[in-house]
Length: 260
Image (cartoon, rainbow, N blue to C red):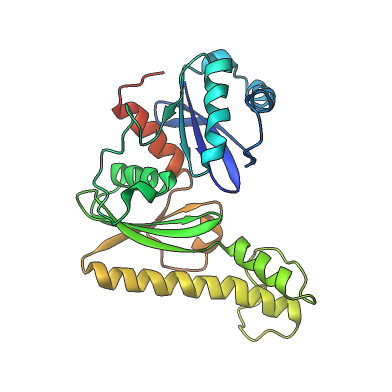
């Protein structure tokens, strides 16, 4: 099987993939200082809990936006899985799509992988919204070329900034307000309304502007942990693909004829 690793700014997601079926997934907080040995102890235990062993992994592919984390993930692959990690965007798993932007070398690996997965699963012009540390909006045309997008602060990042800068504001959970009213009667309700409905308004407003600029029918795909929460309260998404990045890594390995 394939071990697909998505190393983001907040979490590293490990997924065991057979073909395009995800057999297991686990996440750990991103820490560039975490050694290959630490990863191996943690991951071996989780594999065993799900009935798998390290010997079941025959290939490893990594996408990372944290350069300092890459070396230890490569050591993990070579030392504990006895294989050289494939790095998304490098031979033999190059992007294989046009990056029609001013600085293609600076495009985050997760955003390129999401674009690849989105076009493997859906046709036409696409907008991919990924709810992570940042919330990104990525636009690609009907040929699969990446055209650019938007980077906005993630909702948790926005809340952290608000709470840290305002001494009297409490920390609250990210959830839909209990009432549909947008006139809060107390501090906590007002924070819930501002964070949640404010974020919904941002999503809907940016999607509307992107649709208008593309000028053709566009499908909007949402991914990331909070996509399902927002889906219940907005019609901005056409489809939610929770595992889009992992699916993209599996597709890239498949196209490079890596058959673990």
